[in-house]
Length: 506
Image (tube, rainbow, N blue to C red; front, side, top):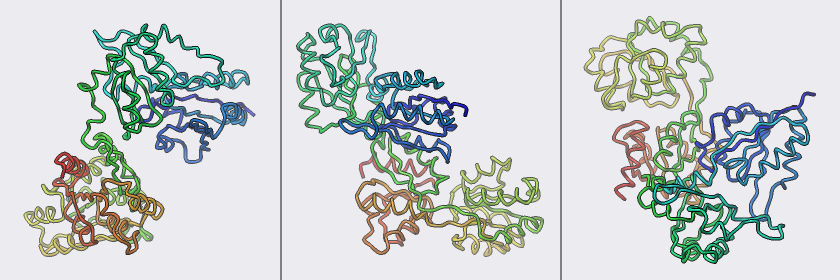
């Protein structure tokens, strides 16, 4: 059997966006992924569906696997002919014991490659607004372990040289030994008023920073109840945090926001929330499924010459329609004689990806806005095709019919409750772990509310944010207190409305 290969990949310090492109490419090819504790587990979704995922996390005094066992596991899996990815926090060779793993692989003649990662020593201070070097303040920095091997007879850190020989000191894994670090630095000449920052959960939305001096930092950290993992920064550059802090100053920083969109659509909303500092929690309330019987939709597609208008009211409708169109060996040319309507810009964008520019896009992205525009289009006597969800209401159909047009509404996809995800959402809401619940459609409201089975609406323990008035009406009708309604009924509009709500401190 041909021997496999091992990739020692640095995943960065916590923010999943800090992994390198090469690291992601190798992750997507792995047969086996062995990962550490401090990683954002969202990274694991980039592994192939059939990959073996093995947890090898360590905390102080508690290891799921000892280092020797991890080394043996890497060798064994590679000898089985598998591509093995060792996903490590930060950089593999900066206090990550990647060197030991590489030695074990070399000793067993296992081919390996190292993919460097962004070390927490650099990234975490940067996310706290602290540059490690700065003209006039610091021309040098050192990265030091804050937790030496307890089996060593004596420290290998030359404190008498380190304390005053380097401008900026960065200590990793030093939470437990913070009092000793402070004592050593002061004993060897570092001034008592030297600024110090202790940063917990750096680069994550839970990041928390406490600033003080060598005189009082231990007391301050205790007062704010910081816990591992932390990065400790000592030096005059800490003073720059007040001016350069950015990560913790974002408008939605630290807010836990439930994203209830269908799983394949959640990423756009999650990305925008993350950019504003929120922690998106993707627990979709609905799944999108194909229709159980596509005969009616297929019949409409094969007879498109009967219609003058084709109107789409969602991205899902576009996706489902074109999936059936392609399965019938047709493409967008089949729509050449039709006028195309789109309820909003996201739906229009989905059409544009297929080379189609809608003939009509309302100024207000609602059913009412769509009807208002169509009322000026002289559609009496024309035939409309509306490919929609199985649970879509009849408001649009009735409205178009009032203008004298004939409407053929056909089910193009089904929305079904995402049972497992809803159960998790229910648990988090009952535990008060969610700040905002977002709803992007009436179906997401109905399915999440149904999951509470008549119990007190714990959803109201969080702020409720709706993409538009129609969704808000559904939420209010279900007994929810709607706190936020987007003025622009789009995903960016929803995020902007949430941001405005918290900025005003409502």
